[in-house]
Length: 189
View: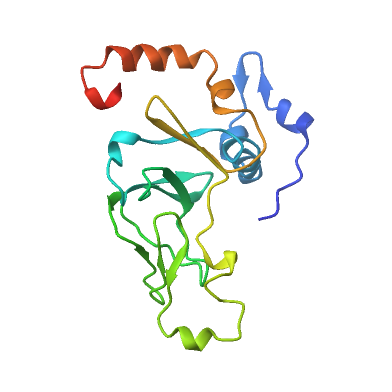
C-alpha cells in the first residue's frame, strides 16, 4: 500500500489548543499514516499466555490491519504469524481462538506447523521444478518480526526496528507488576 504524502504541518494544523478538527479522525490518508507509523511500529498487546496454555492453542488478533495468529508451539515457545497462506494469500482461520495440530489453508490445503513452517502440500509433484519447494522459506507462513511476553502478557511489533518491550512499557510495567502480584490466579504469577 502506498503511504500518502501529507505534511506534518498539515496534520499539526488540525490540532488547536481548544479543539481537534474532525478530519484528524475521518481522513483516510491520516488513517494510513497511523497504520504505518504508529500501529505497525508499536508494541501491541495480543493475548495473555493463559489463553494459549497448551501446544497448538492459538488466538487471533488484528495488528495494523493485519490478521495475526499467536500460537503456542510444540517447544512451548510462543509464535506470532501472519494469518495468510503464502501460496494464494487465503486467510488460514477466521476463529478468534482454538486448538490445532497444524494450520491448514482452505484453498489448496497446504499445511503449516505451529511455528509457521510448511509441513505438506497436496499433489506435491505438481510443484516440481517451481520455486514452491518445501525448503523455500517463502513457502512458510510469514512470522511477525517481534513477539515478547511480559508477566504473561504477549505483545507483538510488526517492524523490526524500535525499542525493546521493557523500554516501550516504561512505567506501565509497575502497573502490570502490581496487578499480576495481586492476582489470586496462579497462571498470572
